[in-house]
Image (cartoon, rainbow, N blue to C red):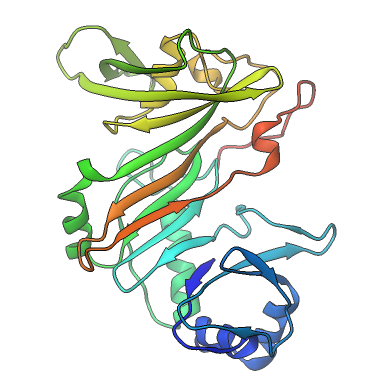
Length: 302
């Protein structure tokens, strides 16, 4: 979780302020089981370590078995990258539905888990409004509004929001940069197909890509969305002969079974209330870039 500090104080006092309502004993447990990064630099977990007003403090849980920072999981799915009185951006793990729908009546979704976390943290019933969805199989930065009014405000200018992804592909594109344009259509088999011409119920889609580097036998691309269609990046990259690693649905090698290597790693928008630009990025875990060539990842869709 990442917070902007409102006043200079010791680390213990800061944790008590962030986790409003928790006991001092619980706050000390958080100190013991967390890693603290202040303005990009790791700091001492001592209760009296000073945290300055206006700085950004990132709090990550630590896996005591190996001392490494935990990424979001089903058991601990919350990692907040931005929060103010109007909006919240959190890192959605892969395999979890962004939110429920009429066709997918799931009791478990990232939206519901985030609301539950906020309710427990703030000790009051919390509702969040979904601004956009990320495919269930994809990890990444997910934006929510704290009222329906703020949801409407940012959606009205959604075409100006910059959304970038990292995609690890099985093949290298023929050109290092390019645009992919076509019409996409959902089918009864729950698979999106690509069409060269517009037909009934099809939607225009435009994807921009830039080749970044080779990652052993795979290739890393940065993707910029110009439209936001269902499975857009996955279908478009498959269509140019570059299926995303792990994406068996759209042409990737079926073995070993893997998490799909697609991450919504960058979001940038003009805050509709404050007028300030909010730009957020995160770096996927090392294993995202280096999947095993032999072992299944025991990846599950939740």
